[in-house]
Length: 105
Image (cartoon, rainbow, N blue to C red):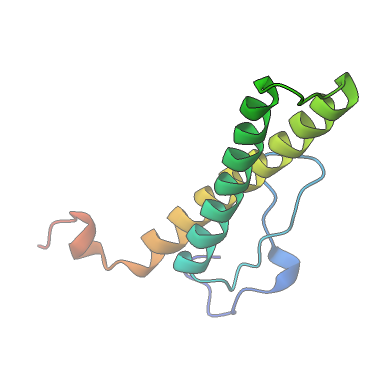
């Protein structure tokens, strides 16, 4: 599909790490993909911060709360991983071979 004259279609969306995952639009640019990956990592970071604050007096969480945070974190991390992988491929396609270290001649 890299050298194909046919533009990417939504039907060609990528799902790399999970059987059930978000679909990544193959028409998206690398900067947008990196931005969405970073947003998901920030969300996981905030969830982990919330867990750390449960150590304060008066805060409590039961096993179900912890399981829900763990599931949400796993999904967000898998999405971020997929986004980073596709963003890297997208950016590499946009960089001319001479800029990637290829030799001429």
